[in-house]
Length: 302
Image (cartoon, rainbow, N blue to C red; front, side, top):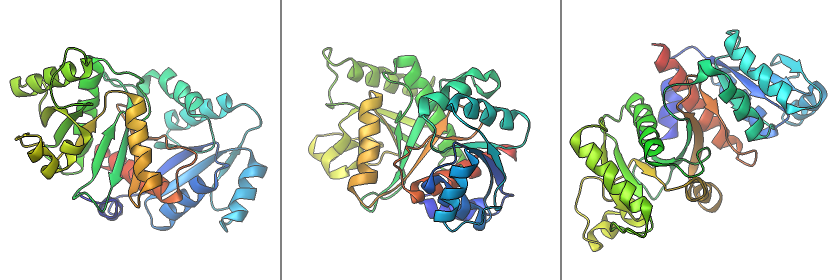
């Protein structure tokens, strides 16, 4: 799949899944889940202050009785805990972050051992740009501050598993650093070389891993040619693994706020589909994220 439209169209073949919207006093989140419901890919339970939620529903011209609402006053910790409980009780199948603080919601998710896999959780930022020929996946855009080598292995595996489910059989993974040559002074280039070797030896499989790359020659064949990089990933990456959260987060948000690109955010490494987008993200970004989460939940259940 090369666009969010393809994902949204594909998920329509499945039954809609129910999202627990944590602190639903968010206009963009409500507009997105309402639109997702109207096109038949999602349902929702709204958690938060009922009065404030209804005020936002009114502003969005959404019928006040369209979604069930569970009322909460005060601290977000109670809402986060109830969000997790709804999943455990089978009353919801996915989580959509509303106006709740990310760290509060993540703490509740991490405390629930049944949500965990053997891998680290991390966040993929997904970009559809008119200047690139396919979807671009950026990691880790929101979770691991400074991933070590083992965490980078998890980041690769998590992203590759998702792309396989999107029909991309052998995704190309670019380890992005500040330069293309291995340098003892830049540990991330050493990790990139080691991960490339692990892929060549078969301990990281189902994808092609190359690096280190600069950002330019990971996504531009012309830049790769000028730098003398000649491999299958150069200028044609599906997945960009950045050295730390700051660089990945800034790159992902730059696409969303400084270009006409379409974006989405999705947590991987969890048994439950989780959308942790920024409160400042647009309705379209949240809708794209809902579509991806619904697709992932549906194909996993098959």
